[in-house]
Amino acid sequence: MSLEKLLKNTTPYEAAANWLRDFEKAAASGDTKVARSLFLNDSHWRDLLAFTWHLDTVNGGDSIEALLANKLPELRPHNFAIAEGRTPPAIVVRAGVDVLEAIFSFETTVGPCSGVLRLKPDDDGKLRAWIVLTSLDQISGHEERINDHRPTGKEFSGGFGSENWLDVRTKQRAYEDHEPTVLVIGASQSGLGIAACLGRLGLDTLMIDRHERVGDAWRKRYHNLVLHNEVHVCHMPYMPCPPNWPTYIPKDLLANWFESYADAMELNIWTGTEIVSATHDEARGEWTVVLNRGGKERIVKPKHVVMATGVSSIPIRPKFPGLEDFKGTVMHSGDYQNGHPWKGKKALVFGTGNSGHDVAHDLHNSGADVTLVQRDTTLIVSLKEAQRIYTVYQGGETPLEDCDLIATAAPYPYLVKNYKIVAAKNAEEDKELLDGLKARGMKLDNGPPDNTGYQMKYLRRGGGYYFNVGCSELIIDGSIELQHWENIDQIGEDGANMKDGSVKEADLIVTATGYKNQQEVVRLFMGDDVADRIGVVWGFGDDGEQRNMWRRTPQPGLWFVGGGLPHVRIFSKYLAMQIKAVEEGIISNDVPSPAGELGRAIDADKQLENA
Image (cartoon, rainbow, N blue to C red; front, side, top):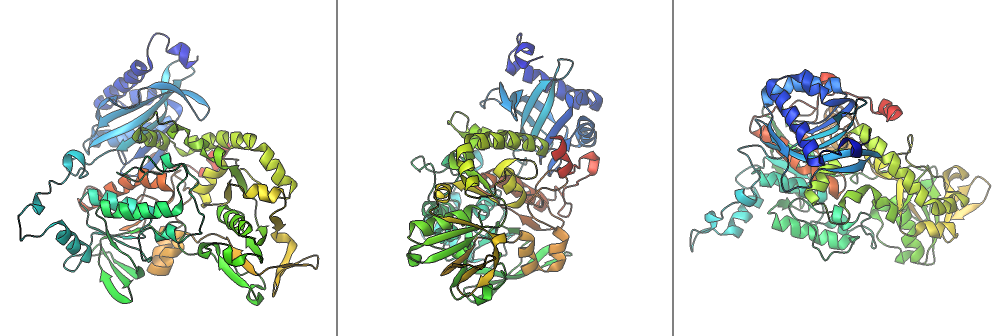
């Protein structure tokens, strides 16, 4: 039975409210069997701290029942209701399925929570839950210091002769008489976002960054870099982008905004500072971190270290056969600035992801003779089509807070199904472009092994795709030559020695070959034991969540943040609340997400077969 027919005698609001009422009644009585009957067999519950204190996903009605049996007595969830003042319940299409979607609110013994409910008819024609998201909004008694809980400022009203705001801030930033509770390594978007959220929870947080100015991680990138996501998904926590900003944000505008953000959010930052080493004292529950601050050693002893170095920390510098014999210039794409010095010269760019294409595009427009070398299949999507996954954000009709909650209600199996649909539509709309690239020899994919598109490729491996902003057309018309790695014998003095005996001459070789996993960053500064203990960072684990990201890790006191601006805005508050809960003794500091507990674990690859 269709949803429209099923709801012909009731409204979406009433139907969603009835489900919530039935669920609360079952939860209050502890009747997990009745609660289980409200879920489809193929149902998914993603929890962001509200029930599990983890970023965790429960798959299947029986596993959901086990979760409830374990957590209901402790959390006593109550006051379930359609969230007033938020996007009202409605019939929408999610992952190709008609569902009744509602944003709801509730409370637990920990604090106020929000959630998303997606209902669809079962075989018997009864509405049951297919997707549920639950999200902890605040820890009662430890609310964010914003709005009604903002500081009064009375401490700066002592009259003439007393310390003013600037005096206090200068002392806070110096850390001469106290230690930070949290040390954040990296002051780009991820570091700024988590530091802002930690600060709003009253956690003393110091950030360090090796660059001279906040924003330099973007400011120093290649000259014509512009963000590929539209501005309405790029807001930071607490401070949205100004309404006059262009749809696609230039890197220098973003860099300057980050500098302003750090000032406005009262963040403590030491620029020109690098980590040298870090060791953890498990008995004391603290780190000893050796820093190089402007050539001078400084030691800090935080309880928590947050790695905010992102996916662009340690460049992968490949050892191509013969590269050491090349007489020209070799640089990684992370060091590339602009193509003007290479006007009239020849360049080889290895790598066909975003960076490789953008560098080749810039070199060509600067007057260089460019050859792009493809080493692996690449996903190409037009810039317009790349925005399709963010349709919930477009139009401005749905408040940002609601968009973020709806977008986060995406358990792994749902994510796979949805991205397959989006990727297929992208390929259909971009067919002419893709056919032109194939005719020139470009080897394409649509997100192996399951055709889930660029976003899943990003979440799994951090790259391997290109948002076309004009380079594809230059390849199609032959303005930029395309070569394949398998046609190259080795690098020689004058360029690439081809297997057919010819030489592809070059004055410049750019390796757009990506960056090492954050696990290797940890290995460099914290040693093999810690690196091996945490394992790989990023990509999906067996629980369907990203490995070690925004959550407790196997190494107590070590946390990871990263991703694009939407990830930073959405997930920073959840990590900040976990660290606050550890500091307040609400949760322990040494328990990673319990994959496998209560039947929650899934094998991500096997889920692909059934999604």
